[in-house]
Image 1 (tube, one colour):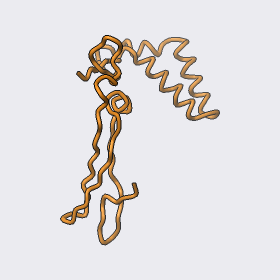
Image 2 (cartoon, one colour):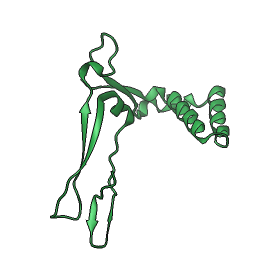
Image 3 (cartoon, helix red, strand yellow):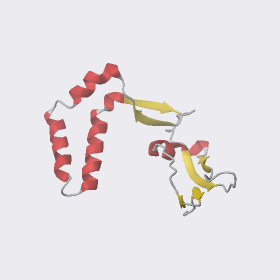
Image 4 (tube, one colour):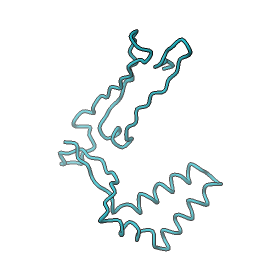
Length: 132
């Protein structure tokens, strides 16, 4: 919004970050609101981020499923060999080569293809996390 979060005699700045998984945000929250509070006892302004939860019926649960979830990738040392083995195929090498060749054509598409490639190779590390 253009409001400073640090104000002093030598200058003002905005250096605050909120990091949140996009998958989590889309699955659980409807909207968010950033609030920068005024205060005089410090050069630093409190920064608060508020989230509004989706209505229960809007959460991404399947028909008849009572739980909302997101799928995430979690490193599991016992699946390390399966992860490594997923890269040892002609199909995997072809997909990776395609992503690399796309860099000079369309960097955004190259990144999408590479991300899809990594997600596919890491499916042995996929874990479903439930919220309810």
